[in-house]
Every structure is written in C-alpha cells, then in structure tokens.
Image (cartoon, rainbow, N blue to C red; front, side, top):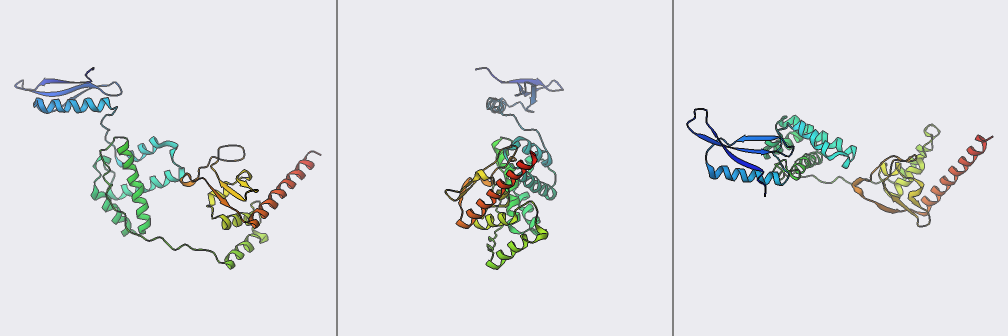
Length: 281
C-alpha cells in the first residue's frame, strides 16, 4: 500500500538538533509540510498514522471559520434539501446565537455558550417554546457538522430546552363559523378568490393554509369523498411546493363539502365554456 504521509526530520535553526514534520498531499493535491514541533519518534509516528487514516477516509482538518461563515457554509452545503421557510428560520436562530455568544470560531463553541444563549433569550422576553425551537435549530447546525466531520461531537448536544406546556387548542363555535361566512359573503370582500369555499374546506379538513392554497381539482376524489394532500411540481398551473414534514395524507370530506365543491367546479366549467364561446366570435 502506498504511504500517503511521510515522516521526515528537519534540523533546528541552531543546527544542534532536529524536529519531525509530516510531508503529504491533501485531498486537493496540494503539498503540505506540517511541523510537529518535537523529536519524539513514537509520538510523531502516531501522528503520522492518524493523518494517514484521515486522508484515506477522505477527510482533512476543517479550516477555521467564524460562526457567521459556518452558518452560510452549512446552508450552502444543504442546498435545496430544505424549504426556503426552514432556511430562514435556521438562519435567524443562528444569528440570534451569534448576537449573544459572539462571532467566534465555530470549533470553540462550548456547553456554556448554549446555556448562556437559552438564558439570554428567556431574559429577552422569548417564550420557553420559542427558545426550545431556536435551540433545536442551532443544535441542528452542529449535528450536521458532526456528520460532515467538521467537529468530533455536538457541543450543544446535552443542553436541555426549557420546559413548556402546549397551548390550549382553540376551536370555533357555531356562531364564530357563521360570522366567518357572513364576512366573506359581504359584497365589499368579494373578489376572484372563493373564500367561502376555502373556509369550508379548512373547517371540514383541518388543512393548513399552504395546503389549501395548493389544492387542485386532481387532489379531490369525489367518488370516495376524499381530498389528497400532495406535493406540487413546477408547471403552468402549479408552482413547486412540498408538504410540511413530507406528510402525504388523505382527508375525508362530508356530503356538504363534496356538494359545494362539485357546484363550484361546475360553475367554473360553465364560465370557461362561455368565455370560449364569446372569445371565438
């Protein structure tokens, strides 16, 4: 097997002794000569073997980076694997972390920095739930750094998020639902969006806003009375969209919802037919 790292000796400036250095090419093919600063042969050979192992595993020591640089480098590596909204949240959390602990070398982050971050966020008025979310997002950067072999372990791994209780789930009363429909049917609020249909679908299925706005007729199975929550591609009719948590699912529809949706679909077909008729004359 070819030896990737050679152990060499170099004389000291006064010519009275020597010290060891490592001679190798990194993964980019660049020649490196790294002084070990001592003349202990056993220790030097151990260091040579460690460097040899690193190179064979396709790994080189990471360059020093400030946390701000580490942030952008991590997001660049991740690319389009996360949503743009998730990217914004991660960037915001890390910037908050930097504003508290300073723009230090990411390899110098310690457990104490995590504790300081949590406490300062709480002192600044953030709720426990918000602090827990921020901590989770900052931790994620360092967890990725472990996978990418930039650090040996996540320095924030054992930081505990502050305890918090889930808020009460608020449900609308019959009167509140009625007032919603009255508001959207007001002449002043009428436009090209059928808000009544969207509100009905939201109340019937519990879908998120983005899920409702990305529905197409292909997602509705009238025979089975189901609506499918599906991701969308970039087409003439749709824009690229991914489901939150990659959660494809089917949701049941009531007889009333199916009836209203069917009427709306038929009215769209009728309007399209009229438009084609008069535009051709």
